[in-house]
Image 1 (cartoon, rainbow, N blue to C red):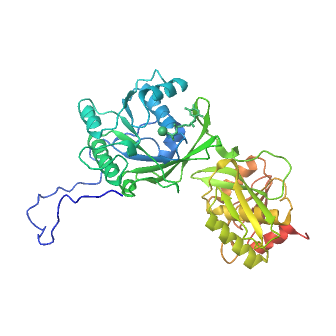
Image 2: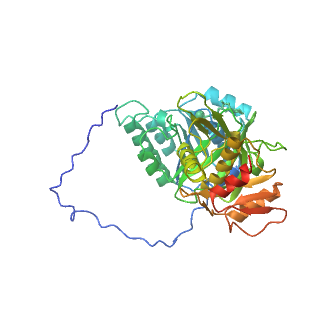
Image 3: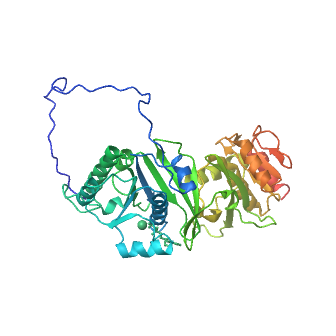
Length: 423
Ligand code: TYD
Ligand code: MG
């Protein structure tokens, strides 16, 4: 807890309708030239940003410790610096020696980045005020910054808010693109005041399982572009590699089908990504409370789907433990995953493999209907391209695709009959 000392006392007695300056109104139509977006040098980063860095914008990047935020930003900084942009990289977290070691390992030590290990926002802004404003300013991380105008240790609510405010003001006034790295709390939200997310123009999350290679850069808020595009990277020995064509990454690559596994053609923005969903059902002998564990999907949604399978399809999961896993450390947010999850669960329960080379998508309602979802035809085409030959999807999901048999699934019970058959 940190105490916040009020600085000014507002009074309702004063009437605000006089005594101010008149403000000038401006047309929305562009008058001068519109500022150009600047490429980060990483196409996947640009894609997640909606087409590159907007000058004067503030970006907040959150992510678990060790996921690769500093690595990604160092790589982007080096690429921008090499293409002639002026980049200032301030690390409050690591000493110069550590960052230099990493840059050497990444083969970026020669890039003309202006690097400093500093934590005082006054020092940083004073220094920046004495030079031409850089194209990009990276602050790693906002929780380590400190303002001598505000009481409290770095990382406290008022410090984080105050430092971010000053840095964002500098960005807006100078046209510098600003990236603030933000720590995340245990539940995955960015640590510090929620108001930080309101103050910045773009909020990005860098996610993935640390034990897996793949990392996904997602924008959660973007004042200058769509929020549904992702950037996909792979953490390798020499930093992050871009993955331009991620549609195959999250498949197991196994030939013969196994019980409890279903392939789902997910959509990430405009790109399809095929992912394998795995379910395991373990019958309990004793009366212990059965566990439900989910990795990569929403546990509330799993509970809902189990309830629909029980209430509408007559299946019984009540005395069984249910485990659900999305392969490859991928996190699914697409509601169209419902049907694939249901198929994996039913297949695991019946201990019957799903038809070979089949994919599943559709949203399931509480009544057990399977509802159409967006981008049906893109999903079908991508699945066909990767060698899948059957698609189970709601009716009217898209025109036929050569080599792909489409099975219309309108209601969940008919799907259960189809999978379980006479078992
Ligand atoms: P880092 O960028 O320091 O993470 P963050 O800033 O989000 O905390 O990434 C650190 C992890 O990345 C570290 O655990 C090791 C891994 N890594 C590699 O696998 N290869 C590399 O070339 C680098 C630089 C890091
Ligand atoms: Mg870091």
